[in-house]
Length: 216
Image (cartoon, rainbow, N blue to C red; front, side, top):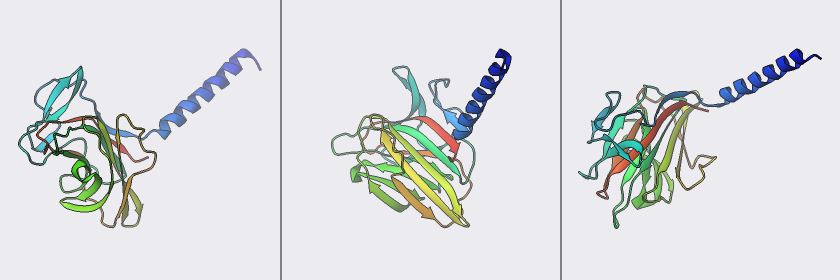
């Protein structure tokens, strides 16, 4: 085999590896790290349901900040409208103050849809549908550290949908298996992904690396 033939075969093999690698990665439908966003009011692409969310910067890192007051629940929508076979994720940072703790979440299917919520006061990772608690599992939250939240919904048969959630602090290894799994028997509504925050500790909550991707 001559040199040109060998180079051609090596190129074909390399392209095959690249194509396979790309196919293995989940398709991104939306991603925002806020690196290119101006500090100040949120861009118009976000829909703030309630809350004084704004883009802030700390140590060269930009993010969305929810102020520490008033003490209520606030949320915003981002990304495109979808229903299932997608995963929403975000990094969220909150801090405790004495015996007061924030709660925060990432959601799918709009304001009345599903959300995966860290509830530090209860030491739980919880799944809600609207205001209804569907399931909770034990979870140890780390104050003052970024927490990666991921909520995925897949179709699992005719009229059945499986939700899977994970949460991990920056200092921890991201779980390979879901910490929370729930089977829903109703077709989810169309809606945008969301992030939620309740600054019950009186300190700000930060949101970064918002994303939405096709399920793996």
